[in-house]
Image 1 (cartoon, helix red, strand yellow):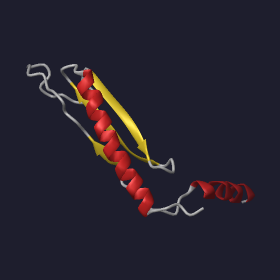
Image 2 (cartoon, helix red, strand yellow):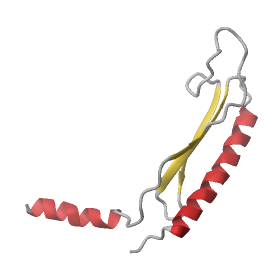
Image 3 (cartoon, helix red, strand yellow):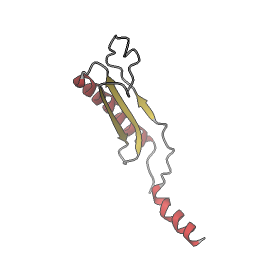
Image 4 (spheres, one colour):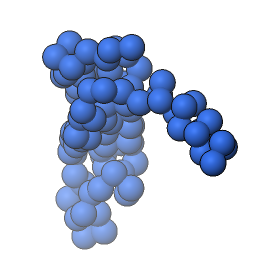
Length: 103
């Protein structure tokens, strides 16, 4: 009983009073190779792929963004990921401003 109380008391500072945001996922298809082998271009089969986890300004995870290309265009993947990262960070900052953490 005492151990349970200690665990609960230690976990309280880790909990936020703000409601948890729904995970937001952006996917980008930059190029699909038109061949019989790669008709289904996915993140798992792409030759160039990047993924970035996004946290809000308070450091809480907010979501992640991905970008991939089956043509191997790494620069286009990086540029797409950077744009989507900026968009989601803006959204995470707006969410945190509307739902501040009271400590």
